[in-house]
Length: 511
Image 1 (cartoon, one colour):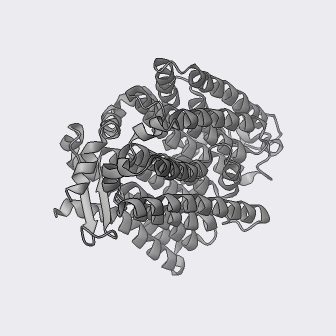
Image 2: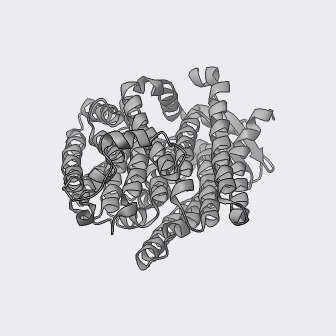
Image 3: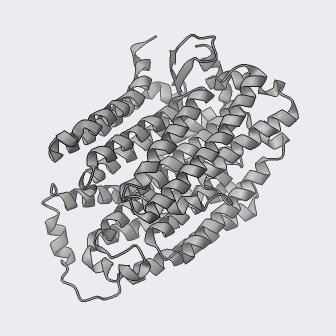
């Protein structure tokens, strides 16, 4: 066991340890608490980034693989962690976004910060665990941990609305967990193992009706977790009720983790061929496309800014899931690129809207009058990211949508191509609704753009730290749009893992 592999445990243990420190940080001064929070997230980012850099050559050749096993090899209750190029890519993008969200949170959260950060880091630990685990039981535990610790974050403001949203989120989260648990138990009774690689080897030995049952329950679990139509209505409530950084975590980060779990289950563990044989691939693809359209249509009629952003997420996640179901190299390229793009854009949008909504009476569209004049630079950042989600060149959202569109056209799936185009047009309309409202003239004493620009020099006061995080997300959306080739290597090697699951299976089973 080389020392390198212990880093897999550290990626989960460090946020958990930070969570404990943060819980007792109510006795600390605010500055010290913020220092610990940012340091905890920073070390996590350093760890995963150094893994990428140190193993760069192996990543390039698609030879990268780390494993760490706790327990006895041949018992069902062995805990197995493994990292290949696919999990490395997801761990990297998630940790990067979370680091920025933590910095924003240190200035945004002004009440019970110790409790907030304790829960936040526990969620991060569970997210890393979900990405790194190689067996079903541990995956189930991590998914349930995410649900349990995000629930109090959703109801953090303790109003009637947030409590209702949190209870609904908890109910659907646990229901999804139960479906996952049923599939897991059925697999265990049929194969006597919960190791994903071992299940992959012998899934074909299970009878066809039982295969169908297992797959349907897994699909149900993930359709609920991803907020795919018709089980989508809990998502806008939950994502709009919580504080802005948690909205960014749920919509920007957590939905991508569930997409990763979807790929792990239906490409690595249960070969995609089983979905094809049982005629489920076309069904899931069409359902995801319908869900995408419905998400955008609901966003069009939403009168609450955060609800509109949450519905827009349903539109994007549906599109990503649909393109992945094409199961081609072009589809994976577009899908993975849009996962990265959506992670950056939706995190940026929720943080900037959180900043802008601090001084409004409510999140309702009527209360946004004149908000564009009050915080000009932040609002320009907000508009820029909106244009990215619509798919305007040269932003990252344009590049990723372009590749998604190409994948649908190459597969001659014209309804998919139509949904990508229609989604963008509908998005243009609903964003314009809010932008025009924000620029309604209201008599107010606001800084001119030039004055705002010069005030940026005092970068370390609290509002400017929040603004800086928003500008970083905006610049990343522009920068990666112009130089998306930087993602060629990590994305293409992740695609290799999806198309060649045998490598992962053999390495995990090799112990």
